[in-house]
Length: 330
Ligand SMILES: Nc1ncnc2[nH]cnc12
Ligand SMILES: [Zn+2]
Image (cartoon, rainbow, N blue to C red; front, top):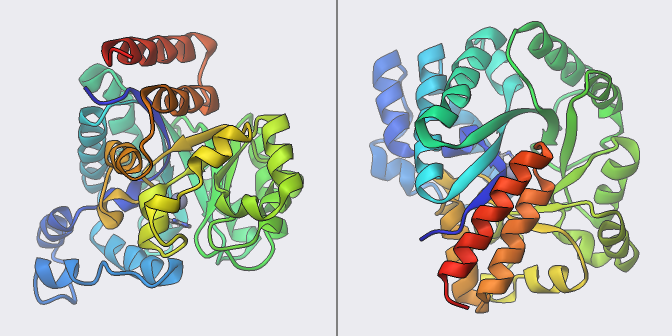
């Protein structure tokens, strides 16, 4: 039985599998620049974040209609549920679609409709986090949030992702607008960028969780702060290997961060690109580091603690994790 968990760092567009890219390209009459699906797959050998992002944004060209976004979301939810995900908070790069002429309404209705059906179909609760693109100007993030707020779909929060270059300060206004609307706030930082980027998103954007945050380890005082304030890090082990942020899972510092009191969680980031969904991340990390049942249960409990859910929902997830632990016989 796979470990029950919340998934808190998952880019919906990063679940776009090569097969679905080809299906949607055919459905929408989009000409792909690859010879065939194997040619596309052969390009998934990334030298770093920007190399990956270039392909990730290019592949989004096949997503055009509300049905496309609903199909993508349903495919992810079915795979996630099969892999033990009980609650998911899905990132959506809205600006990457509106920039291509797909309306916010088409995107948000397709995704949100599928997320709302997940509880009935899979017993899986889900929320939607609109992620701002850091390589674009801050005012465009604010405008994207206003567009999203004008569509009648429930939003859980906002995030910040894409290339980790430049200051996050231009996004302060967008994050303040989000806070004023009662939305949760997260941001990618300390993935390829330095520990100072983590401090910046905490202090300038007021984020409640940090996505990746691995390079926080370069600043002892920051690690102590994350632990003291119980600011969770949403780690993505397979992503970090595939984007060459770390050399291998054998040296992955998840145990070190747990031992130092940091609320670390395990997530998949862009599973269609990085060789695995969240259950694959748990399994490969366990194989590499020899994680015990108790350590795995702690990681899963961290995901419940870090999730933006009601105390009742959290308690149900914690109880499922304890049932899983008991079933392991340790
Ligand atoms: N790993 C990642 N880092 C930053 N932005 C992203 N967008 C999708 N995946 C990302
Ligand atoms: Zn990410």
